Image (tube, helix red, strand yellow):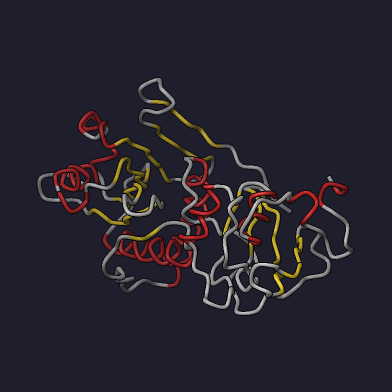
Length: 293
């Protein structure tokens, strides 16, 4: 059973798009969301001079996809910590893609080298596994030597950090679907959120057969679905661009999970043209989505 959480968001500048400090009940962690333009204004935040782990978020100019860099910052001899590291990144022309940073530290300054190395490695690996963002780290961070007691403590910190990160607007730790990505779609008959689209394509002569999962974010077309590879003139521009950016094999097999915000855009992605998702998508019993809703 899911348990409710109490989160406190403090708007440091009194603006929703400004700096945000985030704390969670019964958690020693402290998170900051800081726009790139406001980094210098944060020099007076004492907890940002501590050790911590940080994320640099931005958008790729090549394909418009979300990107992230994960790093750590230890305490330096001059007393500067994670904030100073962010200032260095801001001056680095090779990292000019990021527009805001999210920092994780603690209220009791309890992170040592072991803790931040472990967190950096785990956060980076989770982001790569989830595949919601392009991870800009060139090398996989080393996890370091850690005791099982400390590992358990850090894993608990990570679980809280996932909640906070999602609350701050970044889904870098949240999978598109709980099903994961497999070569073959396992159809779970008891899953009421699965919908199917099957038709013979007039354009390619192939049988188009796809499975979607309805989530809180929209409709996820599952990896392994058979997709029409030929676009119709009626295909919406946004859907066409999404198809071009997605990994689809030459024989029309979708190589990754793809999120579409509406049922009609999901259906259009599958058939390569205009479609009404409310009538095209059906559950395991053949009932149309529009009748279920």
